[in-house]
Length: 120
Image (cartoon, rainbow, N blue to C red; front, top):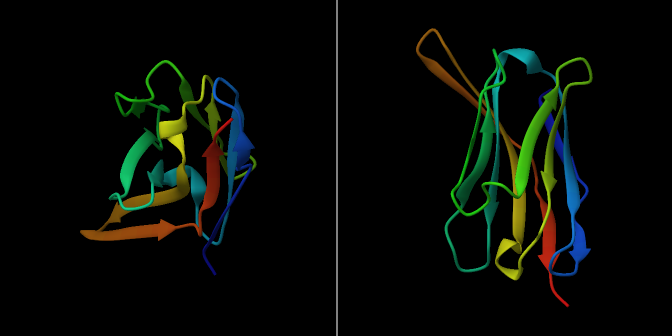
């Protein structure tokens, strides 16, 4: 059974930091590209950051570059998102995503989300 379980969200003041985690099980974590998405109320879900399965290449949305860092620990089947210098506009539900193309088919798994609220 595939599971992605996010944790680490919460309420933080502007300028603060949070570290999100995503614990994966039920699939070969190391072979999947992993991504963090977020969705604010009334807005579409957007890609925040991604990290490749091989080589650990990363990419970021322009809005978070220099403030967020995505990383993975394949030995522990865990994805991370270190968030610094948080802004009110970072407030959203954050989702972990695992994706891999196998023999032309897309394997696409999602977590249930963790809420991040940036407010004074």
